[in-house]
Image (cartoon, rainbow, N blue to C red; front, side):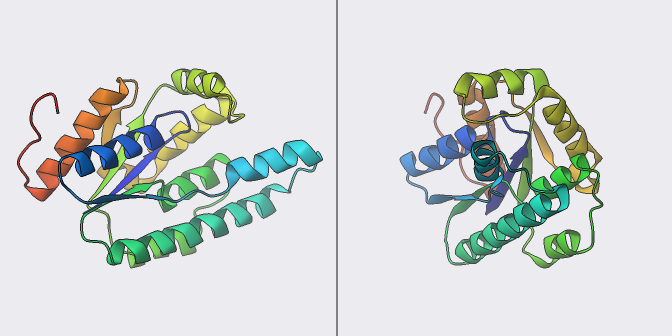
Length: 198
């Protein structure tokens, strides 16, 4: 089973992904977390240190290249793994980012989405951009503006694929989010529910 997690920065995707994989392992299951980052954070840090900002299209081309490579490697690993595969981010994220930058979807990413094995579920972490921004500022590892987060959230909602996403309220406490994800797995695999309080 492959589950993809999407959502704006600060929505808690990575925290929930780690919690889900840990929980599945604690209950005797097999699970792996695969990250499909685009290198945005690294490029932002380098840009801040050097004072050099890449042209928008070049930066997006590099991000897309990194993301596509990571997604392809993740799908290769998933094809060789027996158990739950949790992908933190996917090509949907890149399509949303392209929208925020005023770039068209293009043909390659939508084609690749159709060519790759479809995930069993795409879980979208929906959160108010203001709350996401507060979380980002608190952790101090990223430099995202409220305006950018709002544009990113809107871009996700505009994706044609968005209607098929399973939405979760990412403002919930991490333990409740993890419980909801576990229930999704149980439902998708027709497994017995984990014990209450587990």
